[in-house]
Image (cartoon, rainbow, N blue to C red):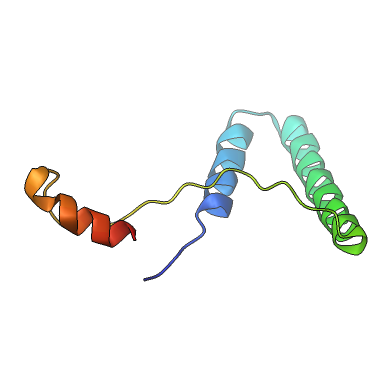
Length: 83
């Protein structure tokens, strides 16, 4: 089984879509704002690691590549794929 983190890819697509609708000045401001947010987030993670604070995680979504039909005959196969 292989796990792939799609979160960063989706965040990057979201950033690109937002920037596509902005002027150059807004894009520059937006890019600087993103960098600042990323820096602040990394700083917060380091502080939490030092103080042994429990980090609240974001929700997680898993997508399965299931080969089979979604009718009642394939429920067992789907259950095995999930676990």
